[in-house]
Length: 258
Length: 265
Image (cartoon, rainbow over all chains, first blue to last red; front, side, top):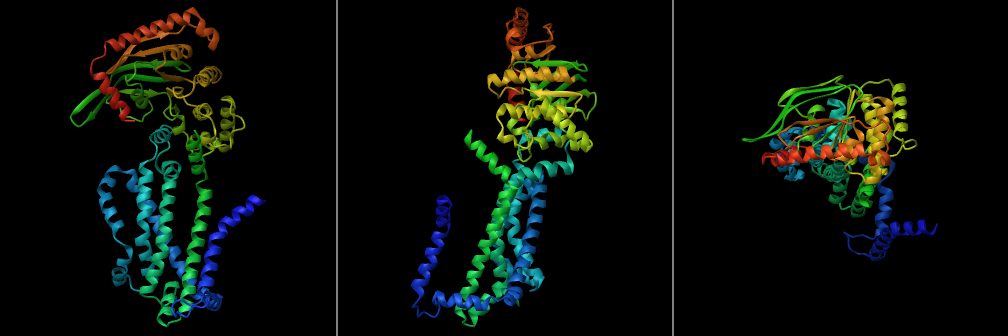
């Protein structure tokens, strides 16, 4: 019981201390741009009503989800194809590294030119940034599939689609998940940025609107909401990973022990 | 059953050619247990990979009674089992691929796991088991597949001596009870004589079958008495002498060929 309590204290301790410090330090703040936390929290409750969440947060999340999912599918599919073929890999790798090095936000104005300013543009922006970590990690994961396991699979006549399903994808899954984890934080950043450039709703759009109309506490509340959202999504991701890669963590622990 | 005729394998890397296997011809009859021994680097692994269809021979042919019925057990048990599948699913996967009916599959998996003494580990993951048990899973997988020939590539080289003796007896008893045809590759002369009905000795690379020996030990063998049998000693001495002779005849090419064939893995 005390063990659980101690762990809980450890988890909540630092966030609580930070909030208390912020609250106390900002309590008598006269600075227009850094209002008291009390005021921000009050604004939070007033601003993020269910209607607001439906009108602004939901569209953001939908675009995030669509872009992330699409990037995941494209990244894994292309990554498996490239990873499984040495020739394709030799041809594609330098190009991929180049594209990966281009910071996605600079592409936003370019993408706007041909994709307009609608949902499509935002999804494309998210995909263009998220696809690289997934793709490169998948390539690496497929490439490093164990040769003995690969021989075993072939010797038992497991080829083609079955090989993909029973060997390549599971063998690459730890790397794929690592890529997806990186892609998640990129997706959130690009979701906000794409909405800041041109949008009529969404979290990024709303925060910029507050900023331009000097609704500073509301702006801060939006930033806090973004932080909470990112935190929630990464926790969700961790939970999913915990189940999907249970075998991998077990295997690693076993190898470490021996 | 297995028939290998005029098998030759030449590795090419750039302009360099290394002849790993020169001319191998032998057969393993239905239900036979044959051991292959040879000096290290003699291309045992290359040979096995050619038989298993993992490597295209340069010339010659390999005929397996029923192509879909070939199973293989590798030395590296830790790397030949699927770590994301449970023991049961590891044994089951090749059967699913072979399109065996579900009920029959369940039977085969249960029988195979019982046969290798792994009852009760069905839901465990391979990495939760000891090395010897993992190799048992690989053997169960091979046996459940009901192969017309079972290839074993130095399967016990990486387990401790105690476990090794147990696993050798396991292979003997599985072979006697289930009537599988086994080609067992090893570098250990004692193991070859203890296990086999027949021992094929390979020359150093470029490899040919150097000699062949029928093991006329009683069918019922056990670690204590068989190994103390004077007949056992005589047989192992003969195999040993042949291997030494093969090594002495080695040209400079053998080392390079050995390197290449292991690098190719």
